[in-house]
Image 1 (cartoon, helix red, strand yellow):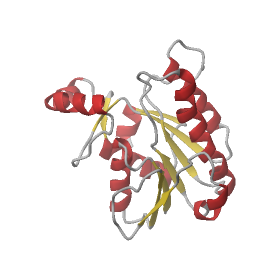
Image 2: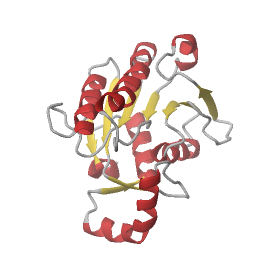
Image 3: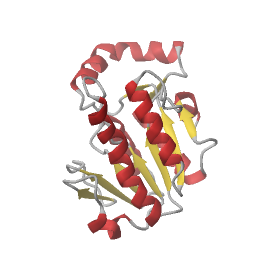
Length: 218
């Protein structure tokens, strides 16, 4: 299996990259981003792009892949809707559209979030934008699957790039076992997300939108 990964330096992306490199059936990983993944492995190649909205000059590099794991994203905290939409919706579709054309049999997994608004009409800005992004991905001519995790526990020394989230993770670290016991359907981990993505790429998904409980079951 050949995999394209967006967002390899983020918390979720780091976990997904780790599982891809450990998986015996993954023969190649192309990490696409504005900076290198920071990892070295015979399977791994970095494709560093200053402009993540245009791939016209590298379409050959994006052809021949079985799966794309799109883990790139930002927090909506303090952002105006237009700016958040550009990064969350426009940037995602700028990558997904050529990938669907170049790899029509590809499985495209998008990391969204618990509470995403599929109606695109709710009061929550981030949920509307995520919902629109999901809906447009599901209409593209490849197998698109939406991951909607809730709380994600970073494993194996992985950290978040977002300062506020990183601080919250440090403070809340002792509570993870309790959260898993009290609300097993609301908590997952970077390891579980990565392994679930690989299983969906291999076997398909039971439905197009997967919650935390679905991710953990996979």
